[in-house]
Length: 215
Image 1 (cartoon, rainbow, N blue to C red):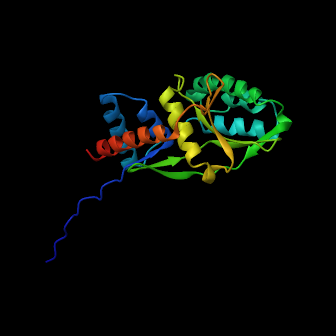
Image 2: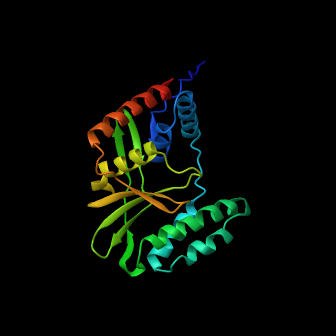
Image 3: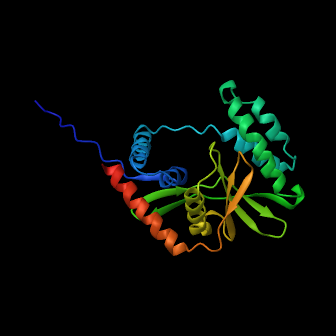
């Protein structure tokens, strides 16, 4: 008679998307550990849902086809009823951002790639929503912020630094931009910021994240 031995499941290695990690660094106190625990449970269940996918597609379509916001105006009517209030709340700000890009003939989409960053001991997936290419050959890698509250200084700094750090992989020679979609406001790197200081801060946050994940 043979017996089987059930081995314990292999531990899930610490991992975060750029969205998860930047939301984590903006939290304080016990809320950090609670947030990391939630991310780990999502990872174990392989769960997660992006409710903003149709909005991103509509914004990209308006940029690509130079349609001046017609896709954004229509998208709240195309989503399921439960998502319509969300889309009504964000589409107006997205249209404001679209208008801020200037002459539609002077800007188009550029292909971006994801990057896997090592922040201290933590793996972080860097994933902008899209890239832009302007007529003067300048480029931007754009990440969208959909939360009801504006992005905190910590979220802005961490997001822009992580994208800039891996821009050679994401979209060479581009500048990182974080767009607060609900308010149609764009955030760019502060020229006075010191990358080495930001790097040390993020490495410390990543080490704490990893310890909480293991606990």
